[in-house]
Image (spheres, rainbow, N blue to C red):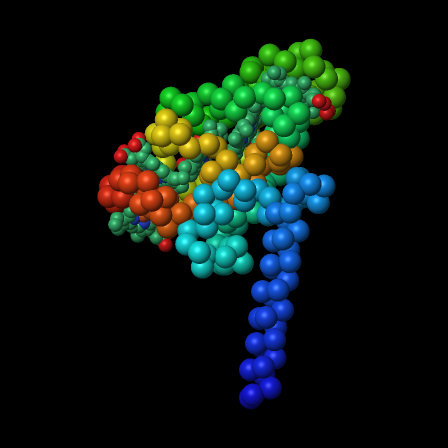
Length: 209
Ligand code: HEC
Ligand code: HEC
Ligand code: HEC
Ligand code: HEC
Ligand code: HEC
C-alpha cells in the first residue's frame, strides 16, 4: 500500500519535472525553437494558453470529441499552407478572411481569390491544378472546419477584432502553421474568463440564443 503511494508520488514528481524542462526548452529564445513542430510555441500570445481554467490541461482533451479538442488538425483537400502565404509571402489575414472585421464569421476565401494569383503563380504544381479544376468547374473547395463550437454557442468575430484582440489570442501562431490546428479549448470558461477580465458582457443570452 505504502509502496504504491510512494511510487505514484515519485511518478507525479517526475512528470512535473519533465513538463517544466519541456517548457523551458520550448520557451527559450533563439535556435531551439522549431516553429512548425513545436506546438507549445503556438501558445505564445494565446489567451490563458488556450485553457478554459488553469486546471484544464490538454490531457483532458482525450475525453472530448476530437473535432472539439485542442490539437484537431484535419487533413485538407488542398495542401494550402499559412506558413507559405502569411509567414513567407506576408499576405494579410484580412485579405483572405475578409468577413472578420464586418461580420460574425471570418469567412474562408473563394477559389476566385486564390486564382487571382495562381493563374500565374506555380500553375504547373499538382496542388494548383486541383485548385484550377475547381475554378473551371465552378465548384467550391470543401475545406474542413477546424475551429468548431457546438450549435448552441454563438461567436462574433467583428466584435472581438474591433475591441483590439489579435487573431493569435484565440488561434495561436497561424502564420507558422503548415496545417491549421485548433489550439484553444473554446470551452465556456475560456470565453467567460476573458469577458470577466475585460468587463465584457457575461449574460447567458450573449452567447446562447
Ligand atoms: C497574393 C497571391 C496569392 C494568393 C491570393 C494565393 N496564393 Fe497560393 N501561393 C502564392 C505564392 C507566391 C506561392 C509560392 C510560395 C513560395 O513558394 O514561396 C503560393 C503557393 C501555393 C501553394 C503551394 C504549391 C506548391 O506546389 O508548392 C498552394 C497549394 C497554394 N499556394 C494554394 C493557394 C490557395 C488554396 C489559395 C486561396 C485560398 C492561394 N494559394 C492564394 C501566392 C498566392
Ligand atoms: C491566401 C489566403 C489566406 C490568408 C492570407 C490567411 N488565410 Fe487563414 N485560411 C485560408 C484558407 C484557404 C483556409 C481553409 C483551409 C485551412 O484550414 O487551411 C484558412 C483557414 C484558417 C483558419 C481555420 C478555419 C477553421 O475552419 O476553423 C484560421 C483560424 C485561419 N485561417 C486564420 C488565419 C490567420 C490568423 C491569418 C493571418 C495570420 C490567415 N488565416 C491568413 C486562407 C488564408
Ligand atoms: C476571441 C477569440 C477569437 C479571435 C480573436 C479570432 N477568432 Fe477566429 N474563431 C474563433 C472561434 C470561437 C471560431 C469558431 C466559430 C464557430 O464555430 O462558430 C473561429 C473561427 C474562425 C474561422 C472559421 C469560421 C469562420 O468564421 O469563417 C476563421 C477563418 C477564423 N476564425 C479566422 C480568424 C482571423 C483571421 C482572426 C483575426 C483577424 C480571428 N479569427 C480572430 C475565435 C476567435
Ligand atoms: C481574449 C478575450 C476574449 C475571449 C477569449 C473571448 N471574448 Fe468575447 N468579447 C471580448 C470582449 C472584450 C468583448 C466586448 C467587445 C465590445 O465591447 O464590443 C466581447 C464580446 C463578445 C460578444 C458580443 C457581446 C455583446 O454584448 O453583444 C460575444 C457574442 C462574444 N464575445 C462571444 C464570445 C465567445 C463565444 C467566446 C469563446 C469562444 C469569446 N467571446 C471569447 C473578449 C473575449
Ligand atoms: C462568453 C460566452 C458565453 C457566455 C456568456 C455563457 N456561455 Fe455557456 N457556453 C459557451 C460556449 C462557447 C459553450 C460551449 C463549450 C463548452 O461546452 O464549454 C457553452 C456551453 C454551455 C453549456 C453546455 C455545457 C456542456 O458541458 O455541454 C451550458 C448548459 C451553458 N453554456 C450554459 C450557460 C449559462 C446558464 C450561462 C449564463 C450564466 C452561459 N452559458 C453563459 C459560451 C458562453
